Each structure stands twice: as structure tokens, then as C-alpha cells.
Image (cartoon, rainbow, N blue to C red; front, side, top):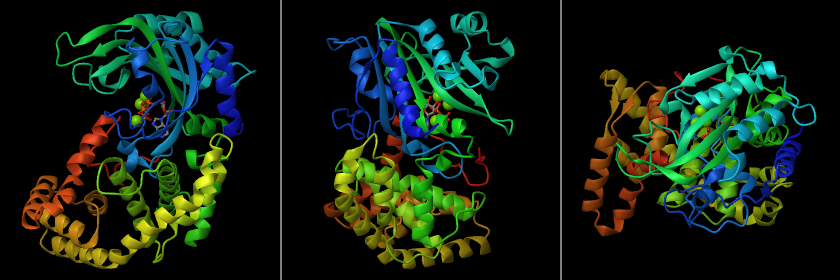
Amino acid sequence: MKTDELREKYLAFFESKGCVRKPSDVLVPTWDPSVLFTPAGMNQFKDHFLGKVKLDFTRATTCQKCLRTGDIDNVGRTAFHHTFFEMLGNFSFGDYFKEDAIRWAWEFLTDKKWLGIPGERLSVTVYKDDDEAFQFWNEKIGLPTSRIARMEEDENFWPASAPSEGPDGVCGPCSEIYYHLDDGSDVEIWNLVFTQFNRVGDPPDNLKPLPSKNIDTGMGLERTASVLQGVPTNFHIDNLFPIVQAASEVCGVKYEYESDNGRRLRRITDHARACAFAIHENVYPGPKDAKYVVKRLIRRAVLDGYQMDLREPFLYKLVDAVADSAKVPYPELSETTKRVADVIEAEEKAFFGTIDGGMKRIGQLFEQMRDESAVMVPGEEAAELNTTYGVPPELLQTLSAEQNFTFDWAGYRDAMHEHSIKSGAGQKELFQTGPLETLKEALRETPFLGYETTEANATVK
Ligand code: ATP
Ligand code: MG
Ligand code: MG
Ligand code: MG
């Protein structure tokens, strides 16, 4: 089944259950100060869940453009994570609840009229104390208990993290649906959240029951397409592989799945897509917040290109392929390709102008560290590389991790602070671009894997 067809089927199925089809919200919700990018389908309905707005409808379904910066380090390494992706959702505001959400998810996945996935391929998790969900899956759906796992708060309470520690806002126990792959592993495709609390302040007693019980579900469009198409990663589905191929051509490198260059081409594909969508919404690369994320994504892709011996801007050449892959759901992207490509090219040029010096310096630094048996990249060096060569510290951290070096974030922050004092107020912005902002922002979105994640310990799944 083609990805465009899957998207349409999902929305049509939930329309048949009385859900109103609503358009995707923007990718960069300037109306919501709590996030830099839309992290999930439910974001546009926060006030609906809180009972703050008058409801014209109590059931909705969407396909939402999402971006999760917390997943940056997963991209290219795992088979199923992007920064930018589309999330299919169905939502109930005080209307249907747990049983219908579960029953309909199962019907959509397994009924031959819809996706027709064999039920034996699916297993689920529930929140450890959610006997209701457990019993419903077992008794009404007929899933054997061996395929229903009870999980702790940090796994099955959304947003992620234990209920006592998570961010303020709407939340609740959830039930995740997994697809069993031929290689024996399982991939999460759909999360059903039974949103019934508003988390306010510190525990205990910080979970306030909402005025009514709600449903918020999120199904990964690319992931579900990849299992239906039987391809090894999300990047191999019908609407993404053409971008991978375009990247391979533009970079002059043959695409091979299990290789460093394969991972680089997948990362370049992802970042080209994320940047095209963000810049289309007028978020240009810059020193802070969402703009800084765009800058970082472009520079990360440029570094990948550099490591494949490219010395000229190339990423901007993929904008047409991105627009083409998105022409059914987001035809408006085709109207801005020239502007978007120009913005990306300018940022690429800027980084290509300094990257040679930066990479040489990094090479010397790593050599020196090995000679001295040092294990941690000093913060002052990172600050110097940022201010002189425009190497974002996150990028240096990634390169360091590949060499099994750790990274001195505290030292980096101190050094940048020092630098901003020495250079006067004009340099203040530079400090604000540091990892603290990035970390804060990453934590606002789920989940953040931590800076320790390295190529070596991340599984290709
Ligand atoms: P994972 O555990 O695989 O990181 P998640 O639990 O963080 O996924 P949810 O927050 O439950 O994901 O989001 C709902 C659905 O969105 C997931 O079941 C998955 O299908 C999809 N999804 C989540 N993150 C990504 C991503 N980075 N790229 C592509 N699809 C994603
Ligand atoms: Mg998960
Ligand atoms: Mg999940
Ligand atoms: Mg995740």
C-alpha cells in the first residue's frame, strides 16, 4: 500500500466513526510557547482536552506534520526515527473512550477492508495498573496474555517520564501497539493515550482529573507504511526512497543500507525534508530556538556531505525531491522551492567556508587527546570551534562520541559565557545558542535519549 493511500484510508476510517477530518496544524506553532515544533498530533487540541474552548465537534482525525529534535541522534541509525515525520491521529474530547479507541485501532489494523495486518503480528503494552485496558485487549479483542505487556510509568504514561516527573499538561496512561518484524524484533506503530489528567506542579496530588475523559492517539505514518511495504526502514517507503536516491545522485555516492554512507544519505534525506518544511514556514537558520534547530540540521547534513568528500553546497538540490514526495498532502511546498533552496544554499555556503579549518582543528584535537589518553573534549576547545569555525557544539559532540570521547558541556557553557563577556553584549546571542537551550528544548519534546547515544550503542532497528 502506498503511503498516500494509507494516509487517506486512516482519515476515511475515522471519519466513518464520526470523527471530523481536520487539517494538520503548522509545524512551528508560534501560538504555543511550550514547544518549538509540533511534536505530536494532539498539540493543536491541548485546549480542547483541557475543556478551555467551546467544542464544535467532539471527535476528530488528523494527519499532523511533526518534528522531534530529541530524535536527531536516532536518525539514520535506527530504522524508524526521523526528525520530521507525519503522525496520524484520532481524538475524542469527552466522547468515546478506551474501549472504542482500542476496538477501532484493532479493526483498522486487521480488517481486510482496511490494512489487513494479520493479528498474530501484533502485540501491545498497557500501563501496569490499567486492568481495564489489559482485560479489554485480552477478553474482547482476544489477544493472548503473552502478547500484552504491563509496563512502568516511564514507558506507558504519556507524555514520557513518570507521572510525578513529567511536564505539566494533559496526560494519561497509554497502550502501545507493536508490529512483529521478520527479523524477530518489534516496532511500535501506534500509541493510544487515555488522556484523563492535567498534570500541575509537583507530586503528590499533581494529577488533576480532567473535566472529561479523552482519547489521543498517534500512529506513525512512515513506520506503518514501512511494515505494510515490507521494507527495511522508513527511508525505503515509496515516498521517501526517491529522496534517498536523489541524495545519492547529488552526492555522487552509491546508496548501501549497511554502511556509514548509507546512514549519511538517510540523515541527509531526513534533514533536507525537515529543513524544507520548516523554512517553508519561514523559520530560517539562525542563532536561537527553532531557527537554531534548522541551522543545526543543515550543518549536520553538510558535515555528512563533507565526510563523503563534498566541498560545495548540495543539500539545497534536494528541495525539489522533497516537494515532489509531499505533493499529495502538502502541494503548497512546491510553491516555495526556490526560496527554500536559496535559504539552504546560503547556510551551506557559510558552513562550507569554515568547515575545512574546523575539521582540521578537530582532527588535531582528537589526535592530541589520544596521545594524552584524554577522554573528555574540553569545553574551551568546543567554544573556540563554535565561535571561530561555526561548528555547533552538538556536532562536535557527535564526532567526539564516534571516537568514544565524552563532551564537557559544563565547561563549554562556562567558556561561552566567558567569551560573551570578553566580546561585549554584541556576542550575547552566541551564548544563547548553546546546548542549554537545545537541551531544554529537547526535553520539552519526547523522548530525549541523552548526549551519550553513540553510533556504537544505538541499534539499527
Ligand atoms: P519510539 O519509542 O519509537 O521513539 P515514541 O513512543 O516516542 O516512539 P509516541 O510519542 O508514542 O512515539 O508517538 C506516536 C507514534 O509516532 C509512534 O508510535 C511512532 O509510530 C511514531 N513516531 C514517534 N517518533 C517518531 C519518529 N521520530 N519518527 C517517525 N515516527 C515516529
Ligand atoms: Mg515508545
Ligand atoms: Mg509511544
Ligand atoms: Mg520516541
